[in-house]
Length: 118
Image 1 (tube, rainbow, N blue to C red):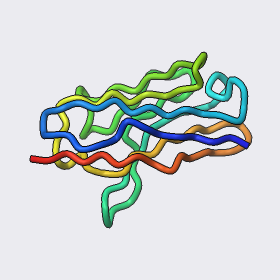
Image 2 (cartoon, rainbow, N blue to C red):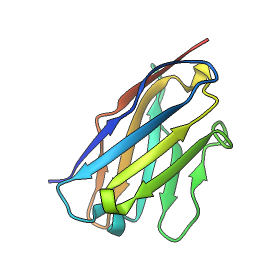
Image 3 (cartoon, rainbow, N blue to C red):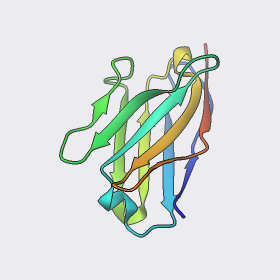
């Protein structure tokens, strides 16, 4: 059974940086065969929205609100997806979720909390 575990969240001051990691387990080379991997976030009282996504054969795609500040990357050998977040703003405060999409299913992690103080 595929399992995604996010880490790296925490409390940071405005302008600071965090690096989120999402480790996939339960299926060898799942990231290598995934159709898409991505990071989403959900703030209190709001819907879950995409932050950054890599679709097979296409360059990374970012939400307008994070362009130039966030970078998504992947290491297939480690079955890990990363989200480097720089110049953080209070409006980036949310629970961040990792998503992996394969031909068979879509998988989600449990999320990691990111809080940015002003």
